[in-house]
Image (cartoon, rainbow, N blue to C red):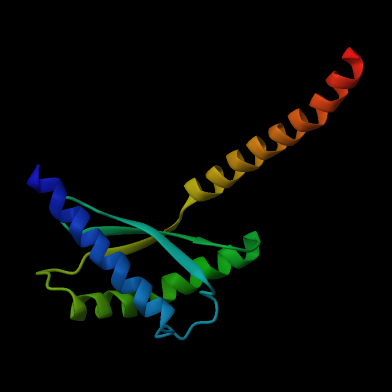
Length: 129
């Protein structure tokens, strides 16, 4: 039980520190753009950290952000090492968070269905009279 607790806690700390670094503009790469860190999954041995992020924009902007994060990873890892008390700083791996895009798509489908239903209701009432 405690084995899974520490990785979650470390993941939250890493997400918080990375968010602050990116928000304060300490990474001077315009390719990163405006991103949101959604979660960090840390392996049970604390050696790997998958950092999930989202970004608004088209696929080209997403690719540029991906490249910029890859360039900034060594800097960000050094910063995490200086800010958190860990024996070994986990390797950072940035991944685009597809779950947010899927969630947005589902919400859009539900909105569309609701609108269709609203448009049908008056027609059904008109036909019944």
